Image (cartoon, rainbow, N blue to C red; front, side, top):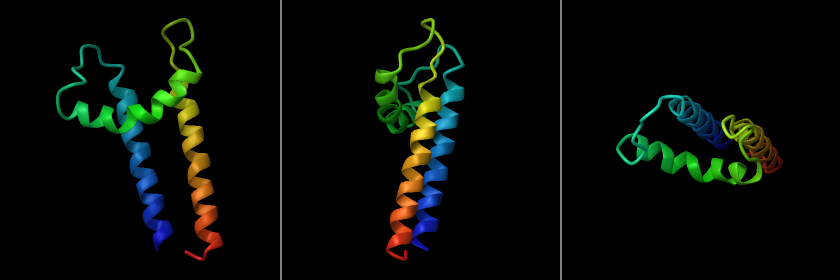
Length: 88
């Protein structure tokens, strides 16, 4: 039951990341107005970790979200493994 709830939280965060990434393709979005400020406040701290490690290719192509998704999947697998070890 707990593992199912945690997996749903991960799924929700995946969806929020996807929405955030698609919205970056739209020019002139004011990221300081709602609901965009909410999305960026939830996703940017996680994405900034990878943006600091991997600079944009050619100054325009940001592949850090791909690495962020891979890392998030690794975290999810690790959390599921720990929950399974404790029988949750």
